[in-house]
Image (tube, rainbow, N blue to C red; front, side, top):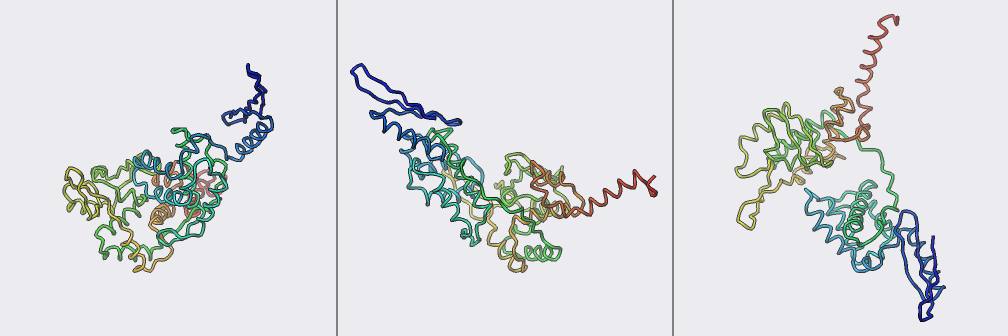
Length: 364
């Protein structure tokens, strides 16, 4: 609601003070010499606030989207582990919106470029879907949130007025027995000496790609036969049981570990820091992985599907949804409901056992 007050100064000059107040938004004020100008500004400001186009005028006009993303990258992304995806998302927004001032960015402009993402190709030649387009929006939304709450550059996040795409059901693509055997055989013969062990770990533990590649020797407890992940997607520590074949491979790998290197799977390309100390980085298995899929003749399969495979095998071997969620590190059961149909046989066995226990053979 807009409130206009007529004011007369000691010198007799007349002015009009306008205050626009809408629930959930800070009040905006301005003064004008003419009543018509005051009414016009009140109407335009109220409309802009409702549509998510109104920002703190002074600060929002000082900074471009490119400057905002650059500062965010230095002050936020720089302190995150493996922010590869976020960098990719923000690079896109910087290219599309970088020259715009924050005051000129509105939901319609963002939606236009978000919609253009769907169906386009990423740097790996894969088509970008609805879920990934949502991730692009979320990355930009957090930039605006920081700019609003911590820097005071804007007073509203335009992403709050943009509805997310309705994402398709979670993908459930897992390796058949024949595909699994073929893939593991090819990985053994790969030029990459770590690929086979990495794939076995993914299938055995359900860990994510970067969780495995960023693994350090101090994270492995050989006595307790477990891996402790300190940095995860959910920002919570997670323990992975290390059993069977995966354990034996890691034990053998530990015998030939690279001295002075903390990473379990280090890259050959090491760099020297300012003090001349050798600094290692996790290995990049992308090329070796893609070559292995081609040789094994496995189609429509991504590395993340090894995680789905592990969850699917757990479900088919009688694990409950709660147990699968615990292994994968999900906070709720919603993410693992996609595997429920794979545990139907186990559910039937449980129900049959319950019926036999309470009713017996004759139902008496």
